[in-house]
Length: 262
Image (cartoon, rainbow, N blue to C red; front, side):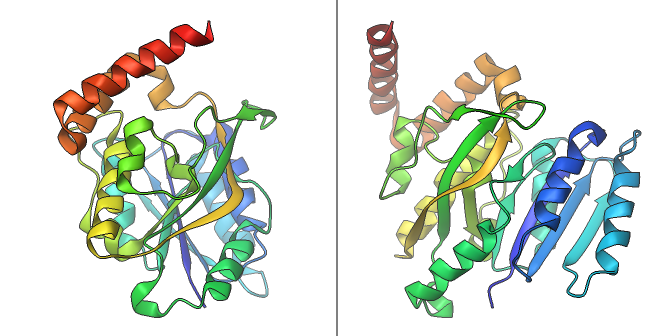
């Protein structure tokens, strides 16, 4: 039975963490490890986590909850800590305020893996799907502008981050080989996804498109709040992976496309 590690990174996130906790708690799949990496919060975050652990301990089939609360060097440093601690075959980052789209999300994915008859050495490197954007109250706003392609590969991200990290399950062994690059403050997840996909390509490992909406995520994230800085980092990341001239031409097309939509 496949074990999923759900990693939640948070800091002073009491206003939104409950939504994420309940979303993991209500999953109808049994084999879940929930890692909560907290940056030593000063609000009610830790109290919420402790109540969660207490409730879970009384369930007939509790899942694993691990909480690490200590200072860190920011979001991506905390996410690297989760990579080191994860014990599931797959890891998904679902941060405070984000939630699974429905209670059967993980069981549906496990069923797809079972139907695929993959052997343990050739499990898909990445399992991916779609996401919905929600507001602070968890109400649906819209689908993402960028949609996951039918067939994903490492070159797909030349067109932008077609799969956001809340809908990107990475095989944990491959994820540990490609930890987050802390030199990027706002777009290390973009670089991380590309590197994992390149590793998958190098090892000739399959990718699994679930055709599911996997997560609902908050529209106002760190990348959105630091939009210009994030775009600069993404340009640098694309140059690193795809070359300067192809990246420049692709960005010229982004500008033309935006003008045509006006």
